Length: 618
Image (cartoon, rainbow, N blue to C red; front, side):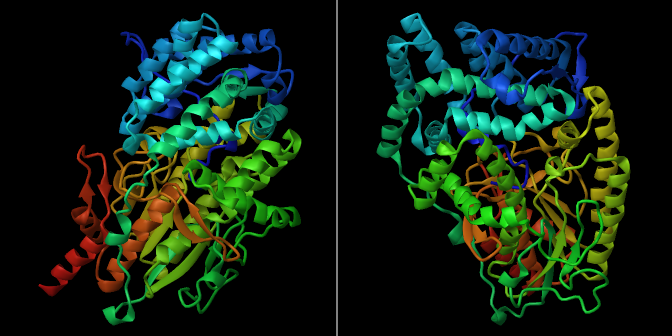
């Protein structure tokens, strides 16, 4: 999992088809960014986890309200962003399924394929819904033995028609979802991810309501079909499971001292790093002033302190080994790997009672960001003895910070980030990795969980003010070090980073590169975000590196793709320290391999180093 838009764990066990499409009118309001969308509030008199398991009449009343608002947005607004349309119509689809409107659900499900950009999504979108709708047509029911038998037949037809080579990631993910799906996991996820908002504001916003709809579909409609679905997916995977070729080993470059290298300072702007794991590869500030000799660190209030890695509580330390196993196990399960970690993850998530699971998921969220910077650092310095790590630490998991944000808080970090830029400039740091992103929507999520303000529009207004300062803070840090190459991750939400307003990924600056993720074969991952700022793509699939304490994990995400570009850039600068950020970017782009459709530009370290050496020889 990645620090960039880490999804709640329940999304790993839900396979909810979504779709989009509607007729455009002449008087609609135009939506240019996510901030232009209207906000909604759904007052609740009980926790979301209780509503999830309520009777059909109670939940239906809630679903009807959400459905009306979603239809109004689709009717009254012109939205060009396909990911947003898919999300909105995903909620519409869920309400259709819950109300037994199988014909409507089938039509909505077909619409989503017309809005999918990625080849794999074009082929796999809506498979579950199509099979359910056709089973209803065949059996005349939505429950019972005849329906189950018809579903298995229809689902078999849908799955067997798929080309394995281009859809295996989704198919394996579907199997994992059904293996983990349980009532306790759904309730525990709602307790961890939705109940805090209800406890603070007495309501859910639209994204929270959409999540609850998806959980209800999983509980009522998908969970009863789990055995039938697994009876189709497992043999299909077993019959076709041929691994994709790995292109990255042949492209890799390992430098040695024979290469006449110049030390190159690489900043990991992240959650900190276990610097004990990288002896001989550390920057040492001869005159640290209230901070670590390896760089800067700021606590959640923006106060500087001396430390390379965030402190953990006793409970977090106790949970750490188990969480690491679950992280690796989920990645193994997602990719069809039968490992001890996969077995442990399956057991943990399928047997833990809801209240205990909710607490465990809180530990997972903290530890996920805690170990993130160390993992990123290992990727950035791999194969480069000239690398010198600089640590820039803060907690970017904004919605999990326990206090409500303010404009004053954002201004404090704006000053901190300016200090970061100045520090990197003064210490001649040549490359920076930023595997994180923040948006107005994320700040709203934070306010939803911590603010007592019940009006979602007022929370939106405050979030917009905080975001404006935060965006300036991130851009200001980059601009303060113009001779440094900054590299950031595109995000893991399969969305347009510019539409979301993610920073830094949506920024356009001459010394900034945004990176998307591809798999071991160089094919676009299902999770990677995209957009006009994403100009390079790198390996973000099961990339192995250290986490604090020395364990090595294979993790996936654009968080792993970004430091692969940092790794290449730092090697180029170690070979030729005269390179500017713009020249380094140009070299990587020139040597990159474009995909046939032009969507991707895969880095090629070996070709890029060769290109540089040719230029140096002239």
